[in-house]
Amino acid sequence: MGTPQFAIPSLRALVEAAPRTGWQVVAVATQPDRPAGRGRQMVSSPVKQMATAFGLPVLEPVSFRKDPSAVEALHRLAPDLIVVAAYGLILPAGVLEIPTFGCVNVHASLLPAYRGASPIAAAILDGLAQTGVTIMLMDEGLDTGPALRQAVQPIHPDDTTATLSERLAQQGAELLVETLVDWLQGVAAPIDQTLLPGEPSTCRQIQKEDGLIDWTKPAVYIERMTRAYTPWPTAYTFWKGEPFKILSAAVLDGESPPGLVERTPEGPTVGAGEGRLLLRTVQPAGKRPMDARSFLNGAPDFIGATLPS
Image 1: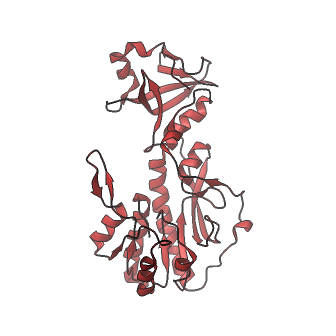
Image 2: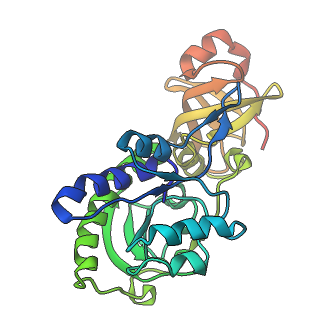
Image 3: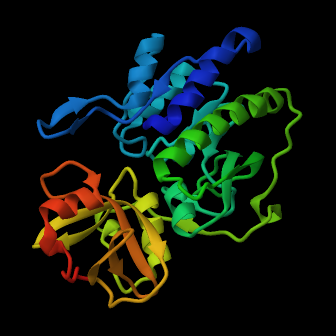
């Protein structure tokens, strides 16, 4: 059960492990096709596209809670195990109880930290030096089930949610197969999360408005926003009443009034609550991403503007 690109390595790893393990992927569940792009054409999830390429049956329930037939379809499959990776649907008790070996989740954090929907972006936003993946048994709580395995992943200074997601997805897939080999043979012992290091924390689903920059925040935090919110919703402000995306930036010492745009030898900077933000890649409304210096060539009046907080 999975939906976005993050789940693809796990699905591929399960299919590729089948010949040597004797496993069989009997079906794939993913979220239904949704309209996307300017034309609002129906688009299948990355997981559905991969499952179709593998010739696997695909289930697309809207809800397990509201659709008894979706739960019945799982009963008919009689799975020994359900693997979940960034699925996006809540699994009620009636689903969790179906497989003999339970439901195993690939979660992109070192639980109990960052339970919830956006652990990768949250770790970058908080300025962590490392995060990781947890293979866990699911219960009815929000990522509260016991852990089977964990692995650490460093967060690089230039990591975005996109780049870190790619590494965590691959790491999670490899750890998943290793863990399942032991779990299905009865040699992996679940560990209650209260026995794991770190304090419990949660992170909610990201909303578009989360990317709106408050220039009274420290520049180091705003720079982390530009990475945490790539590829979506991006960090943005407003200039001349239109959205103005800041796709990459750096932090400079010195102080300027929050939101004030100034010219420096390194490029345009914006004052913050602490320090200054050096703009590197920007995207004005209706334009393609561009180097901030190139943007200034066509918009010299950007210097001296005060961006709203």
